[in-house]
Amino acid sequence: MAADNSIFVGGKPFMNYITAVVMQFTTKNADLLTIKARGKFISRAVDVAEVACKKFLQGQVKVDEIRIDSEEFTNKEGRQVSVSTIEIVLKRQEPVE
Amino acid sequence: MAADNSIFVGGKPFMNYITAVVMQFTTKNADLLTIKARGKFISRAVDVAEVACKKFLQGQVKVDEIRIDSEEFTNKEGRQVSVSTIEIVLKRQEPVE
Image (cartoon, rainbow over all chains, first blue to last red; front, side):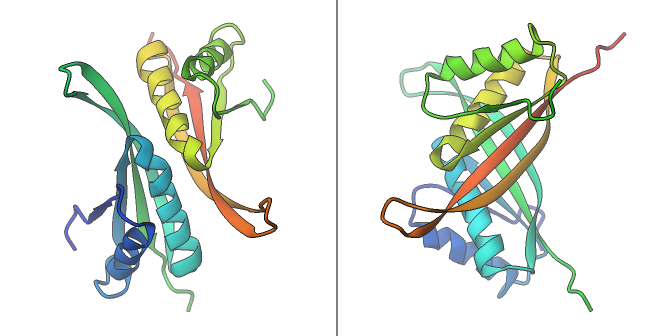
């Protein structure tokens, strides 16, 4: 699995992101996956992580780590602005034998 | 300091929350503070944490831990709904002597 195994959450339909997360852990057999978002989509990224872990992959995948940060960029008006970012790392759980 | 030293981020003006965070660490001399939010205000809670730590309390306070969860509740229409939550724990840094 590539180290940059990640899904960027934006304005697409919510279930697109859930499907993408579930597919990574089922069809593609990933062990780790990072859900990323910026600005107002941060709330949505948390929703994706919660719904994926608690409703679709319950007992199989858990939140391993959460990081927040800020990025500086220049907007259309040429002003320097800052946007918050989040990275939520999901990890496959070891099956209880 | 009380164990439940926390600030709940909602729809008030952004600087109200920044002021509250800065006050806790300066005037009230707190060592730990938890920023909490639910639903769409999660993005805002991350903004509050980032701006407080990087612009107002730089070198003094850092993000120590981030937790996400979901709460179930019954809405006005009597339907069972789920909302995501976040808790961002800020911690005073030891001064470098």
